[in-house]
Amino acid sequence: MTGENIFYRTLCGVVYGGLVLYFAAIKLNVYGQNPGVEKTSISQAVTPSRLISADAKAKTNLVYTPAITRAAAENVRLKNSLWWDFVGRRQSGWNIYVPLISQTVKTESPADSPAFAQAVWIWQRKSGIGPTGIIDGETLAAFIKLWQSQRLNRSTFTSPDKLYSAPISDFYDLTRNAELLKCERRTYAAYRQMLQAAAKDPSLSLKLTKTGELASEEKFLRIISAFRSREYQDQLRKKEPNAGRAQLAKHSPHFTGHAIDIYVGGDPVSTKDANRTLQVQTPVYKWLVKNAHRFGFYPYFYEPWHWEFVPGE
Ligand SMILES: [Zn+2]
Image (tube, rainbow, N blue to C red; front, side, top):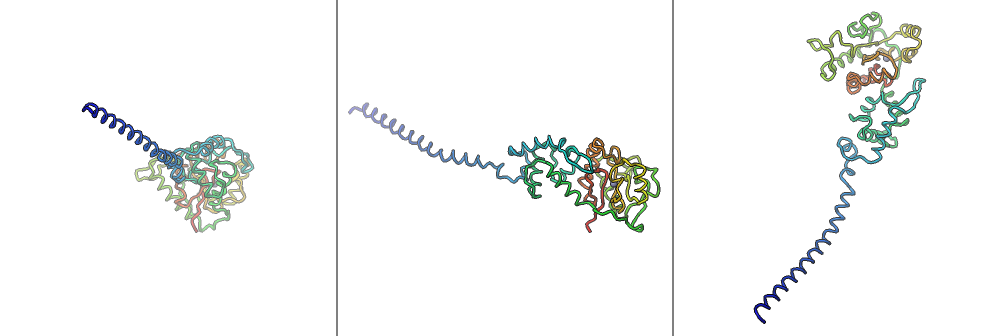
């Protein structure tokens, strides 16, 4: 055997051995990867977005399920076209109630967004309604039932000693009859506190005096109407037979002195859809929806101006 032969044999051996080890390594690597691939696909199947709580999901921009995306599309359709009956009138959609709904389901997202549908879904589940994320007739009825349950639900007359005659400067109509400036005392005190809090919120852009009070020319948040006597309510009914149901009512929460109609924009107390649509978009109305409860005031959903003082008693 020549030195050359030994060299070639050794070379071939090294090359062969190297090739064997190389393919073995590939094979090992392939087998080694297979479970890894499966592991990866498992972890993809259970993505973090599926494991994360629905609440957290609504707060982030993670991918929504197809059902929630479809619910958002259905809400876009129903918010203007869901037919329902209230106060003897056929009502169209729930767009006017979006600020109240958003407050109820705790979302800041627009009504046509999946995040909104997700918040509705969560609220439905908590409220014992089959969760869909869609505001259909059943869910709207559940919202209304909740909002109505927060109201006074009484219309008994307050005794005169509990009434306070508020200064005319608090009223929307500065020529209002002096007999019509009364308000239940605690209700008035709570209203004043609420007014001060609103005045401190720069996002409302309210016109203020140097001392931080509402300026005389500011109409927002002024009292349109508070306590109404039986005689006054009778007069109203005779004078405006086509007025809103609340004005015509024989049993009105205004008899208690706990109800205040507050100016939130537009035509002060018109229930026309166009007017209410405008009112619910004002910063003042939106602020009331978010904050009035802190002062004991709860809304009558159908009349954006009507608020009732319901102290936790
Ligand atoms: Zn009212």
